[in-house]
Image (cartoon, rainbow over all chains, first blue to last red; front, side, top):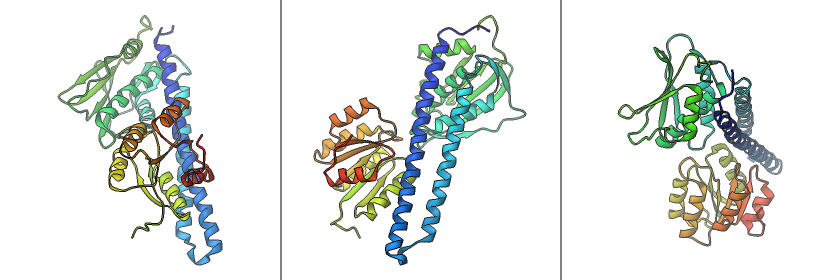
Length: 220
Length: 125
């Protein structure tokens, strides 16, 4: 299948942005490990001078914190790996639930991230034949816009469902003033490349990305 | 009860474990620390208490650290604010220093360097 002119550049920009977000997260993990290990060293040194001040429970907790942070670091690296591989093939079969999970994880790396709840889906995970990298990009833009509208104390709910016109990814919980993600030439490029529709129900506070089961060969 | 003789530091960072560990390390070295996990809470703290210094992250959940920096210094121009970020680039560094930050540190932070800055003798990167 041929390229999607213009949209491929958007995909590259998305990968750059995602990498920056992820590197920020990794640095935060390393900073926490570094500071916690430093504190552990401080407390051990203190205990050597004043053995009665040794608090084994606190030392144990700090050790657990380091292990948990390293696990967080592994998860972030795994996310980077998944995103990097989303560009392996311009067009491929994509598990939409998995794509939502990956982009939600990326969203959680943002400082202004809201809470994200996944709405339960019925039946098997829908798969579509589409452009994986660009799908991640469009979905990330939707979540990013939702986070900015809802705020860090709010919550958005994300659902995936198969309908007559394809598979839709819905973002619920948007405030009345939400303006959507329509007013951007780059979103227009992504919509064209994915043959997606972006619908906003202002009353219900729901943004919906509707994706075809299979993008047409002619338009690609 | 607060020990008035200890220098007081406000640490502003949404990475709670990082903040807690750093606060404890500074307290072991004689500082008194408060923690704020977002920008507006930090500004509320600063209205209530005369901190000697602020350690400030840039990426915060509600408002950007540079907004906290400029609003804090507008209220207290002599306040010692040290930026401590995992994210900032050279442009961020220049802007923060122009706004009045005393130093711009990148995480992970070297504690001796931070201590020197809190003592007032260090040169920020």
